Image 1 (cartoon, rainbow, N blue to C red):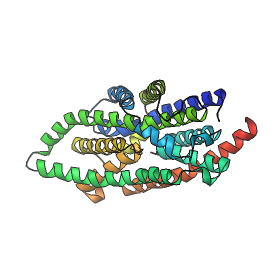
Image 2: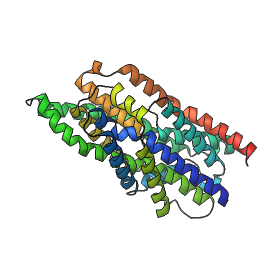
Image 3: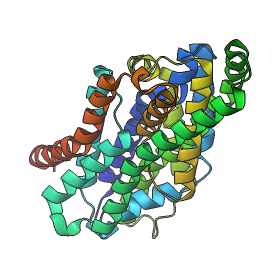
Image 4: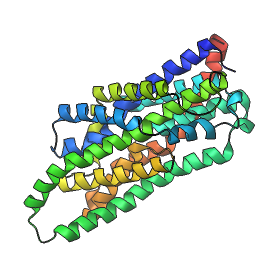
Length: 330
């Protein structure tokens, strides 16, 4: 059981995580439109912050998945939830510092798993629930690569008789819409992860009786992510926007549209996905449709390495955080 002081710590850390998630993952929504010069960076960031907030307010299905599918029972949760958040926050800051796109979703899940194993043992983990979450995190970028390739090929087929300059001009204007959809979908999925963690803590502390996300929790998480988004994440924007594949407006439009569709679909299915992975996968798919060699696969390999490393690394960080926190504070 969590007492009031621990509940406050969970809420503060979850909101800090959401804020960092906002500026860490800003690149997901605006990297393509900024790199193709469809929207000015300042306007893109402000618009993304607003749409992230609105997207975060529309649903709580993903929050319930995060809150209910990691541990066998909410009553087993104690200081582990704080340690898991600490591990995830440290990883996000490290990857942001080096400019490497990394999944905040993977970081949170990994941090929680490590802290739970050390504090309550493997038996406390909801094996099927975690498998479902991990599979959705793995399958989503693969799906994004495939559908991004298909969407780009369809656009090529439809526009083959038009001049490239005319196609790019139209795509430049349409990209404002696709980037907005991407930003909205990002908020609809990512902000719910912190909502789920806070709700799980409230159930564990006996402050609420079910994993229904309180309106105040929704508002605070949405606001925190929007504020984080407004700060921007320029290092990661440069990696996602330009180092994977040199994009023109038509490519940016296809990548944003594809990413929004994949993320919205996951949100409707109440599945958490990594928007970082989905956007990167979309760009790889779109680039491959143009020409396989056009994709900078060395950069893509570095990103995939970071994806693979995130859950085990944050699990270790979560476990170490739990050991340190229990010795020093609890």
